[in-house]
Image (tube, rainbow, N blue to C red; front, top):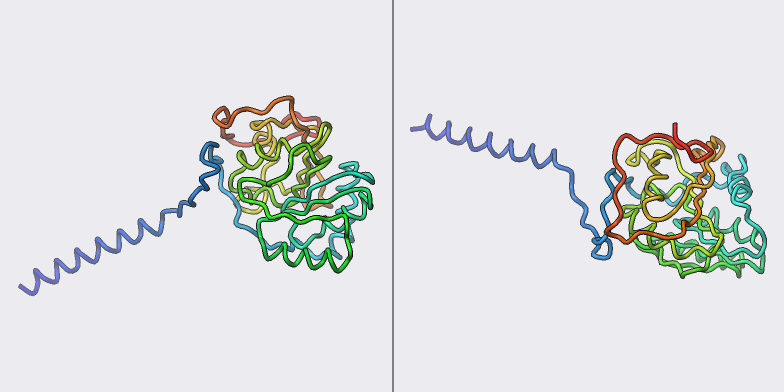
Length: 254
C-alpha cells in the first residue's frame, strides 16, 4: 500500500513539475491597448523600456551628437519640431536653442516621471519655446499639420505598436516635414532595429525613406523619412516579415 501511495505521489509531482516547466518556457503575452487592435501586431520582439538617460550629456556632446543630427536634419531658426521619447531632455534643450525664440519644440514621452523632471528643467533653464505632452504607446498624440521635423532618437525599438504609432504620427507632419530616426543596427529586443526592418515598417504606413547614413559617432545610424502622398487604411497594413536586410544611403538595400 505504501509503495502504491509513493508511486502515485511521484507521478503527481512529476506531472506538476512538467507543467511548471511548460509555463516557465512560455513568453508572457502583453495585452494590446484597445486603440491599437485595428492595426497588425509587429512580427518582431520589442525592447523593454530603457533608461531615460541614454548616456551622459557631456559624453554625447563630446562627439557632437545633437549638433550632427540637427545638421543632418537641416534644423533652422523658426522651425516647429517634436522630440518623441524626450526623456531627460538632451535633444529638447538643444533643439530649443537651435530653433530660437520664433521656433517651437514639443517634448513628448510616455513616462510621466521623466516629463516631470523635464518640466523642472525647462522651467529652470527658462525655455519659453518648449511645451511638454504625455504620449501613449500606440499614439504620439501630436496635432495635425504642425511639425517641420519629428525626432525619434534611440527610442523607436521600444515602440510596442509601431504600425498604430506611425500611422497616427503621419498627419502631424507639415507639407515638406520629415521624421528623423536615430537608432542602432541590432535586434529589436537588444535595444536597436535593423535598418531595413525600420524602412519596411515606415513604408507600410505611408512614409518613404529619403536619407540613410551609417553614423558610428551617433552610436548607430541616421534615417530620414518623408510623408508619402497617401497612407493606407489600418486593415491594409501588412506587418513586415522575413530576414531583414540593411538599407543603402540611396534608399536601396544590401
